[in-house]
Image (tube, rainbow, N blue to C red; front, side, top):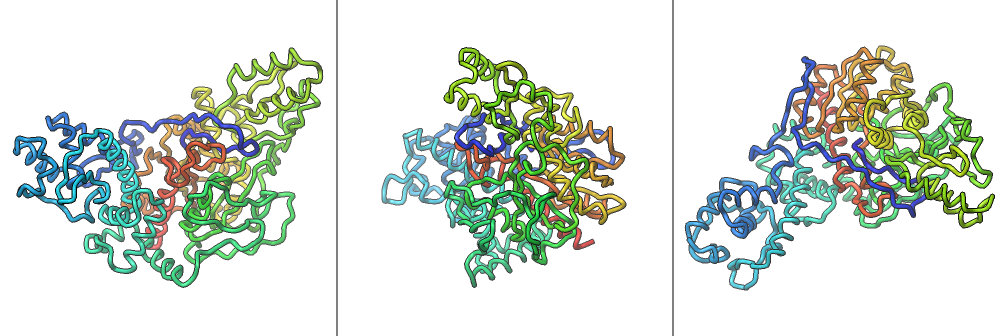
Length: 605
């Protein structure tokens, strides 16, 4: 839900601008359960640092400011890792006591005993990554500073994955063991599988450290579910989609930058006005609620992403829908959920399905050579004034109608930026309130924040009519209302969908890092709702204990809804398509982690 570039639906050749929103540097805030004001909750690791605060680079800088040479600090971290700050400090003091910084690399062969040095399996760097210039076993000082920089970058990448695994409930020892076994570059899902396989085999190095109490609090039923899944996968190859409109399921490594085959037309299991053969959907036993869950992400992703998402969410088949079948703008998305698919009903009145139905006043200036009747995917950014001015000048110099080359250029730009005709030879971007209308939000829903922020927030939101069609089955099931855990809420597309369906929200726990998005949601909630809204800024602050407290307070959750940001998945984002390993898209693993904890906590009620 952070401000990230959305996917391109029709024009892959265009490179969209990224209007990313930096995460706030202040401590994450958690609204007090009973008091109206905000309170602060900072989750710390075993060393007393807030999550993500103590990166490898900042750790080096910290010791440099204490008077230790940078080369000495880097060598010390290479020697014993950086998890035990006391051991590292003792080692640096030992180095300094030698009085000869040139002897740094000879410490292990000079008779000096390095205190608290752990086994290789517990180090943060594999032995292959050490600077080893001789064959005598001693580690000589590397005078090439670029080698140290590469070391720090690699260690930082490793730290990031270790932090993600720890956030998912695994111990740091298990994370380090998996990184040693699979390599620093291994995908997160491969590392998770490695840890789970080690648990099954009973040979995980940290098995004795990960006792039953920690298992219950951190990951609950995941271990048992993974055991059963891994044993089954040893007997057969990985599950693949069979034929049909969904094509073949692709490899899990995510290394191939091709997208899986998507159905055409992209109408999901059913949509109003589209007759398809009845879909018989058998959910795995562990996927059956409570709670109901609903997860959305962009449809067009690097190969293997949707298979990985499906595998983590109980092997449920994704439902792919292009919102162009419900509105005047395209929006290709995939949904994994355990909701019933029969007896759905759309929001009424049905939204307009063409540009002129939505905005009839644009027809006056629309040229006959512009064939567009629907808009492309609504993005997080809009065309610059220079772009629209260039089009206007080009058309003013051209004949009427303009030559084919000019027509093609103008139409391509109009499709790319969703430009509409507002005067003779004059195009302009959609206004924020027009984007709100196309996406199913009430007018002025995002008003009150900057225009750039409005476009950004809307471009990353749910399409309300599509989501409401899927959630409509809840209306008769919960006549007294629902309690909702909303992850990566954005501007509240799921909440608006429930409201428009007439489903009362008794309580919503909303997790959203964007301050502007939280302000938009709070403003809408105060005007329309009577239930309880609890706002959480940082998903990492949702520990198992806190989740369990919410489950106890609200009697469980009826719906867990969310969708992680798509910047690393979008088909248009060619330069930074890191799949589920991307900085933003890896938030999916938090959705899965939290859902699993909720299910386990509700099972114990």
